[in-house]
Image (cartoon, rainbow, N blue to C red; front, side):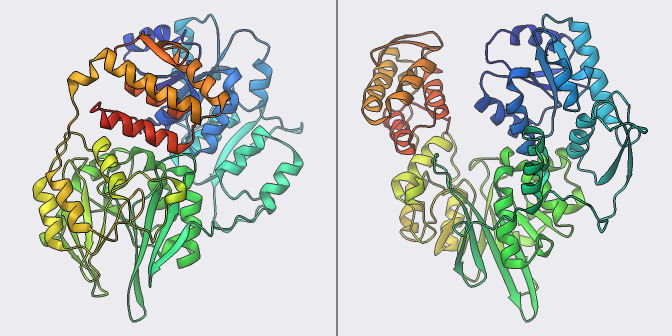
Length: 538
């Protein structure tokens, strides 16, 4: 079986070596040249192993605290830190000294992989306690781990481990609210930090939960440093004493605690949720989907067949999925008397995309379709989205995608409001918006993308404006990062070291990575679109 690796190669020296070794042996390697790209890949791919320099161990703990449970292979240039790695509960198998023997690397990774696969049946004493904990979390099993070390003081690198049944009502001396807080102790292992973890109470963000109407709540996940303000919707359908709470959309794992606490504030517990409607295939939401299913035993995912296939591949049980294709005429009649109509919007933007019309109130729930870019200060559940920001998002994210039939069906449904996954709701001028999108034709020009003087002039012009608007330190950081791909002097780009067609994307990626003020990022994005140069970074 092919093993998946992600290599964090900040110095850009090792990926050719690892690439050749893993390509020959039939395994898969993905490379990230910085931590931002590495985290993006990890959120999407979920590899078996992360290869990184020991100097970047803090990044590894960030990965774990974000709910991504992959085993590490630490690269060492000497043996100075071997003991420190073992003290953290890892083993010799996690350590690769440079220069390394390819056979040794393959042997260690294969043994770790096999131990991981067999962990529920047997545990090797050489696996390492932290490897065991990470593997159990990755497999999402509930067990107790009994650690013994004879009559000596227990040390994490010299301990016997056995798995025992875990009972939910067992009394524990110390509690952690979640896995992130448990692993935070590894980064700052002091008695005080443990005490804080045990005692601290986290209240739901008041700003996150907004009551749109009776039994209709919006959970707003605001990103002050970005252009995408996420929306998750909780709708409760009632009749007499009965109720059917339904969640529309989800968000990445770092937002899951806020979503969980907001739902608990309204319903009292996640177990009350009856359905989660997923209208698009968003890889960054995968861990949150699995979390939700684990914490809500009676929850069903309602989605389309193409999206269901990807969920089943990720480990979601088929019996927990209900297909919209199984509803007659796309209509789901609830026991409360309410009705939800599922309108397929294939290739807007994904093969399995769809929207949901609540027949009574005539409100439409959507994912990417009808979303918009939005600055955090402009975000409001009661303020209608800006038409220009909707079309800018649509232009960047739906290039080449058209489906006039689906848009006509939405128009015939006569929605009075649209609630998308990103940005403000659409509360006015809905017919005008549908008409604009239906007639819209992307005007990106491939010739412009290959026109080097045009591209370099545009980027130089953007840099000129950025110099006036950005803090000097950030601007210098931008130029320094950009110099890897282009010759930049005095804010003027004279030549590039990469394919000119890739340069706009690389420029936006570098700009995004230094976390500029979002308004600057929005302005740069708009200039590329206006120049009819396609970009897909944001």
